[in-house]
Image 1: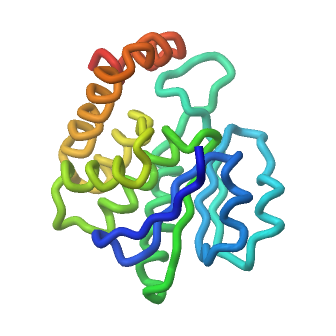
Image 2: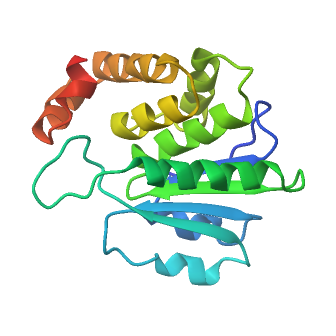
Length: 193
């Protein structure tokens, strides 16, 4: 999969969502802000040493959505931090460019990007925001726990969570094997919910 860089007419900053293996592709780009989300104990990727100066928030939590031995789940405080980072970003000049990554660029990163977009555009409905997320990152499968916490913090009354359930349904309709995969890792609520 090749790395892509997107602009969006919906938010006042550039957007990139990717996985760790795609990070080197963006070292020469004008990335001004990086939201890095990886498992606890994972160091910052080496690729960042080749990036120009940028603001960065490193968050460390599991991609799990329910308690399991050895996993560190996302907490409300983590989502508070990523939303504060997003608020700082929107106060920047118009040439700001946000790169959000997690291990694969599919779940934690897409959920976080969606929340930052929703915060930047409280006037837009959840479906419009989700459609933009899928345009930017077609393989998106936003982490449900991140979404629930963020939906609550943004006062969206479940609309963001409802809209991402549409992503799950559409992806499973095209790729039924995803249902088996996500159930096998304890994320059946996303598939069956």
